[in-house]
Length: 264
Image 1 (cartoon, rainbow, N blue to C red):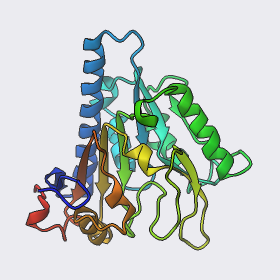
Image 2: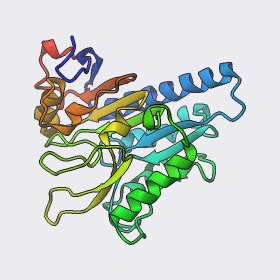
Image 3: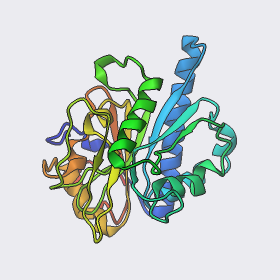
Image 4: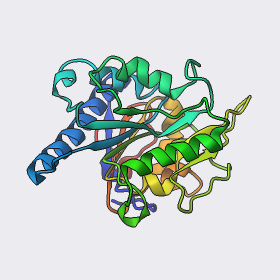
C-alpha cells in the first residue's frame, strides 16, 4: 500500500523495544553502506566515497553506540564513508543540546573514523545564515555538479518529532525550498533555538532515507506521517528515485493500524 505522499507504508518495521530498534537500525544502516561499498568496488571507482547524513536527538544515540561497537566496528567501511550533519542547533559545540556533540560522544570519537571524514556544522560563525551558507559550500566542493541540482546522499538518517517535524523543518515555521541545500530556520520552544538544516529537496534527492521513531509520544505523529498528512514536514519526505524505510518501536507504532503495513 502507498500513502498519499508516495511513501510505501509496507516499509514500516516494528521492533518490540527501543533497544531492539537501535540494534535493528544499526544493522540496516550498516547494510546500506556495505551494499553501496560493494557497488563502488564492482564499478572500479578509483576514489570511492560514500556520503551519509546523521541526525541528532535521543532516538538514534543508542544506534550510534551499536555502530561503534562490535561486530560493526570492524565490519563497517569507515575509510570510505564521509559523515555529514542533517541539522544542528545554533549553540556552542560543547553545549548539551548540540547534535554534533552527541554524534562525537556516541559514534565519531568511538569508531575508527579517518581524519577529515566528519564534516560538522561550524556554530562559531557569525550566525546560522552564515553557517548554512558555509556548510553548503563545503558540500558543493564534494558534489561540484550534481545531476538535478542536488547531491544524492547514499543514506540519510532522520527522526520524527512529536509535532511531525523532521531534520529542523517544523510545522508552521516558514522554510524556503528553492535551490538551497542548507538553510537557517527557527524552531518552537522556550526559548526557541535557531538551527541549520538540510532542505526538503536535498533530503528528497537521497538514495536511502531511514526514519527512526521511538516512544508512545511519537505514535500520533508516526500515524500522521504514514497516512500522508500534508501538514507534517516528515510526510513530505518522498525521494523520487530513492527508498524510505521506517523503523519504530512498539510504542511509537501503537497507532499504526494494519492498513499502514506495519510488520511486527
